[in-house]
Length: 382
Image (cartoon, rainbow, N blue to C red):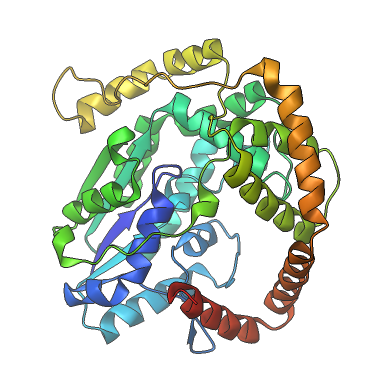
């Protein structure tokens, strides 16, 4: 059996790619490639990615909460059942995920814990052939996305991590040394090949990313149907919406209320968002890229297109948040947020979210069946 691992990283079109791959499981099998699903009680869960498996490599459990060994057995059983020669796995938490900066105890360092995760993966793959594909984003651009993400999902993470932009930079700096991370993969997992692709504006469109990835699989995009890609909820929120979420994060909320908040903020962004990206201080960005210059030079030498050419293209100038208009923006957003929270639609959504969370915890089989039904209905456009 051969393994192809798409290891991320996050914020490089992974959700669009995973949505496409999960929609095309049957078509991929025609080419001998198994993009495996998870099964609970014999019911396919139709999960788009393999982050649950990746997280299990460090002992962390997320739905459907299996061990790494059980996941891996399911993957191989599916490949054998359909007569496939390759198992394709996609999880941005392979490259990132656990260990996270706030989880590292004083007597351990990031390299030790990250290496242990890859050793667990290697113990499952053993000596079978493996190819690794990774899309990498300029560290300063990724930081802006990560900081906005930390603020946006602050109420759903086990630890409220965001305090300031500078604090996130210091915490995440070890994970931004891409050359060192890929060296871990080379030395521990020992793949046949590591394909590292710089993520830029040319790949920012979901279908362009998909076409690029299919090329690395040796497949032609013309062999596939490209349905309208979903997951708009994963797009970046406008900068003023992120600033408003900073305020909301100071107020204690239940997980169910936090999920309702996300829904409302997505709607508000559609209706009144400026589409301006959250930006960090230019001086901080320059410091980050200077600190990582040697690492990026190594990336260019090992994985670049041609000698002497930088691995990452120069960034484009984008609109930034007008701080002078911020108080007006925040006041308008808060008024509209309160109005939407009182609507019957949002009350029903809160009840639905609460019921789903209860079933997921207390009756996972029923949850899996209902999730399957809703998944089919949503993809059929009903």
